[in-house]
Length: 373
Image 1 (cartoon, helix red, strand yellow):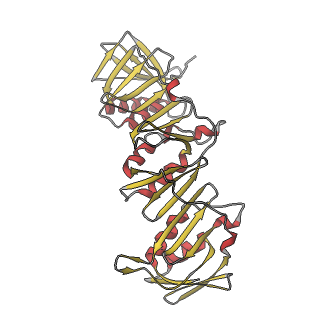
Image 2: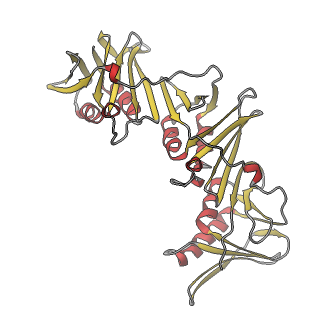
Image 3: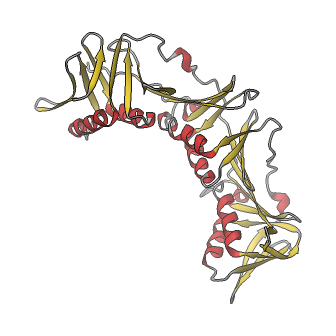
């Protein structure tokens, strides 16, 4: 294997595939990047066992030559050392040649560096092919779906499936749901009618992966029983899904309500954040007291600590109601709704309540009240 390649395009490909290589692994092969020089270009693959990324650096981009002096073949080279070396080479082109299958000789400018390499057949067999029923989604839409739900998924949980975002496609809609049992966030977007699947994708992983798609208009999505695959530009990204049955959100979200509060989102959020300073070193418990004439946000801290603030702009429907809640959960929910005004609907004092936009049902935030005694 040999090639001379544009340094910036090479580095871009290494960094893309390198996203999938973890800081450590019990399998040394997974600390490497797989380099495959073909007639199409240089394929670079990285994986940590759960996430796999393959990207192609083409031989040419339009009329611009990217790779020359080509000798087809492959090698496995330690990801961290290779990336750091290419970053630091002060040259427009880099030449890479594999010697005796054990050494990757990399040269650029006055620098020549030998890195150990491994035969490509030592790399795990990773299937990175799109499904026939892959569908396309705007990148911005996918990022919004993840951002407006992922915060509700816990990093750790006794039920691992809850650490994921549940993606369910049916009837021309994709519904994303995340919950830690105390709160739930759901977002719906339109997709092609013929797409049907359910996948529990690790929330933390997905939040990081979608940032790679920024700068592209759309991404193609394929769902398999054990993984979900994203394709954009010259790159394929595969992520293992979590096994287990995800809670059915339709059973958790109330259908009828008895109390309604419509309020300016920024005013309520600002009040909650100011009141929460009182409990900065303990559970962020805040009380919302509502009547038709007055809506008050308050908090207590021990015997002497007390803070309260009345909202100026609101519309409340229902009898007097008091709700105690985790202020962080409600603040996160208000931010996720992304609306100038929010509608908060209540069933009863200790029943979960719903936060959404008065004009948009595509995002639903559910929060469970806290007990004070």
